[in-house]
Image 1 (cartoon, rainbow, N blue to C red):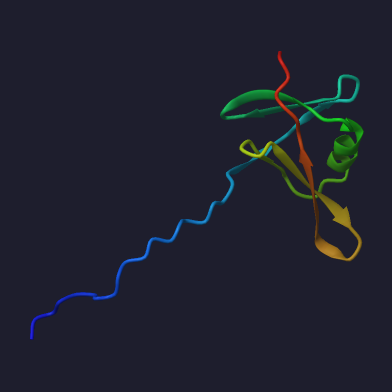
Image 2 (tube, rainbow, N blue to C red):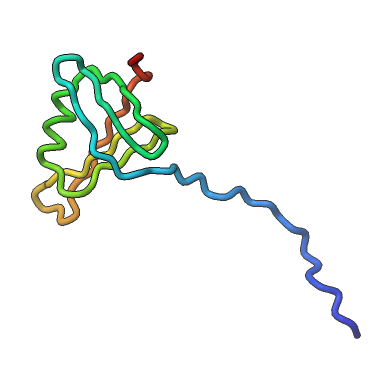
Length: 99
């Protein structure tokens, strides 16, 4: 009897939507309340209502800072007692500021 192949219907499952994150070194301007991020895609300047929180987190960072341009989220991993890998803090930045 010849081989007739798989007889089960093909199901299309969507690929997991992993957000594209890149390692960045953000520049925080406490006076203007802006965060400047430079990546391969270019430089963007974003606003945040409490830039001092981002600056404090960057001072305690134990891993590289990650940026997701699609969701405008900055992820800073800071040291934490009892957490060997640290704790991730996420900061969603508002719209891009005009230069």
